[in-house]
Length: 154
Image (cartoon, rainbow, N blue to C red; front, side, top):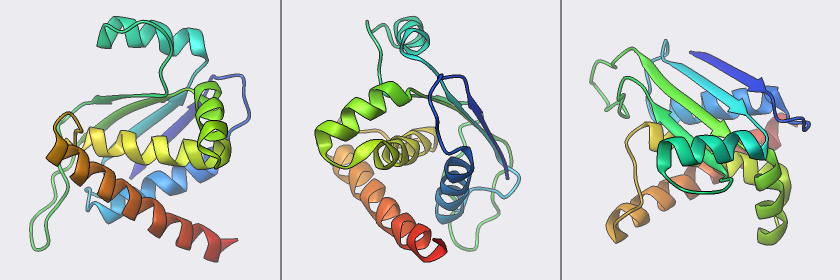
């Protein structure tokens, strides 16, 4: 897997952790081992501009997902599709505020947003109640599994 993490946010982020987390999620979701992902951390002005340009919404947001080759999670005994998963754009400043509000801090919020964004790249959505239940359940499961792995590595 090629996972590129670019930090243009002006904030400290753990680039290695984001890369390991992304690889973990993509492995769990059975994404082709040669799939490509780019994660860019940006400031509030940049994400606000992208949010307006691509989503038609004003103001900064936490994460934007731009799928490329419409890759989907792989199934057991199925040949995996190779390609570009897409790009994630994260805003650490927004993540910091949300992490404080949620009571789990910035790093945990960035982890959550990364998993959330990768699931969007894989075609998951949360517009309808059933979709919401499926996506957020999977997101929670992946985050729990990641915390166990990350804790055992520490």
